[in-house]
Image (cartoon, rainbow, N blue to C red; front, top):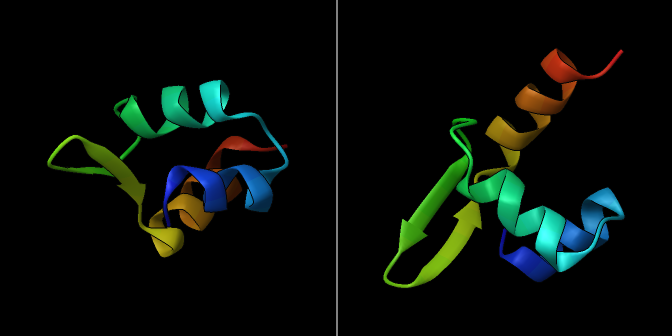
Length: 51
Protein backbone atom coordinates (compact mmCIF):
# COMPACT_ATOMS: atom_id res chain seq x y z
CA UNK A 1 0.00 0.00 0.00
CA UNK A 2 1.26 3.47 -0.76
CA UNK A 3 0.74 6.52 1.46
CA UNK A 4 -2.51 7.57 -0.23
CA UNK A 5 -3.97 4.07 0.13
CA UNK A 6 -3.00 4.01 3.81
CA UNK A 7 -4.75 7.36 4.31
CA UNK A 8 -7.96 6.04 2.80
CA UNK A 9 -7.73 2.70 4.62
CA UNK A 10 -7.15 4.23 8.06
CA UNK A 11 -8.97 7.54 7.61
CA UNK A 12 -5.92 9.62 8.51
CA UNK A 13 -3.94 12.39 6.84
CA UNK A 14 -0.76 11.99 4.83
CA UNK A 15 1.50 13.40 7.54
CA UNK A 16 0.28 10.87 10.12
CA UNK A 17 0.45 8.04 7.57
CA UNK A 18 4.08 8.91 6.81
CA UNK A 19 4.91 9.00 10.53
CA UNK A 20 3.39 5.55 11.01
CA UNK A 21 5.10 4.00 8.01
CA UNK A 22 8.51 5.50 8.78
CA UNK A 23 8.32 4.44 12.43
CA UNK A 24 9.82 1.18 13.58
CA UNK A 25 6.49 -0.67 13.42
CA UNK A 26 7.47 -3.56 11.18
CA UNK A 27 5.16 -2.81 8.26
CA UNK A 28 6.90 0.10 6.52
CA UNK A 29 9.21 -0.49 3.56
CA UNK A 30 11.21 2.15 1.73
CA UNK A 31 11.84 1.60 -1.96
CA UNK A 32 13.96 4.39 -3.36
CA UNK A 33 12.52 7.55 -1.85
CA UNK A 34 8.96 6.19 -1.51
CA UNK A 35 7.40 4.45 1.46
CA UNK A 36 4.97 1.54 1.34
CA UNK A 37 3.23 -0.65 3.89
CA UNK A 38 2.58 -4.36 3.85
CA UNK A 39 -1.19 -4.63 4.42
CA UNK A 40 -1.03 -7.91 6.35
CA UNK A 41 1.63 -6.52 8.68
CA UNK A 42 -0.29 -3.25 9.05
CA UNK A 43 -3.44 -5.17 10.00
CA UNK A 44 -1.46 -7.26 12.48
CA UNK A 45 0.02 -4.11 14.01
CA UNK A 46 -3.43 -2.51 14.25
CA UNK A 47 -4.84 -5.55 16.06
CA UNK A 48 -1.94 -5.53 18.49
CA UNK A 49 -2.06 -1.77 19.18
CA UNK A 50 -5.77 -1.01 19.42
CA UNK A 51 -8.03 -1.61 22.37
